[in-house]
Image 1 (cartoon, rainbow, N blue to C red):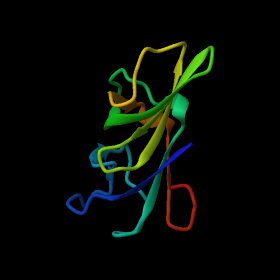
Image 2 (image 1 turned 135 degrees about the horizontal axis):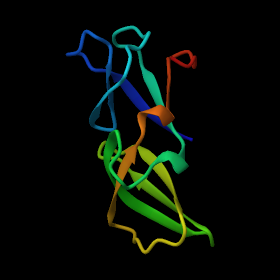
Image 3 (image 1 turned 60 degrees about the vertical axis):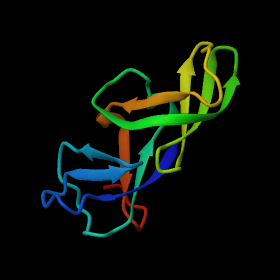
Image 4 (image 1 turned 135 degrees about the vertical axis):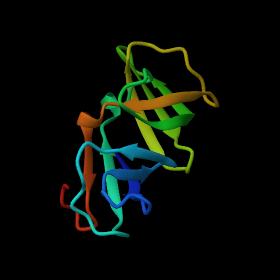
Length: 119
């Protein structure tokens, strides 16, 4: 699981906008979190997809590529320097130094409060 530091957007009183990896992500419902509370954004590597879906963490700078027969594991850094791992089906011809879109479906995300509880 990718665990990324996140926080509620200070300029959104609805508590529906999350700032993570230098991006603002609009959530479907408000979070039960306090203003300024450190949050953790969770996303499994197999749920990160290069095709644009409902949300994105921006571009990931590829640091390492592992070819594992039926899959390719890509280790990236987000714009703000956080690590994000991507698991792709099949063998992909991508290289260190390139970028890959870190797109995902909001339904596949997990958000945790400072005490580790799922929000």
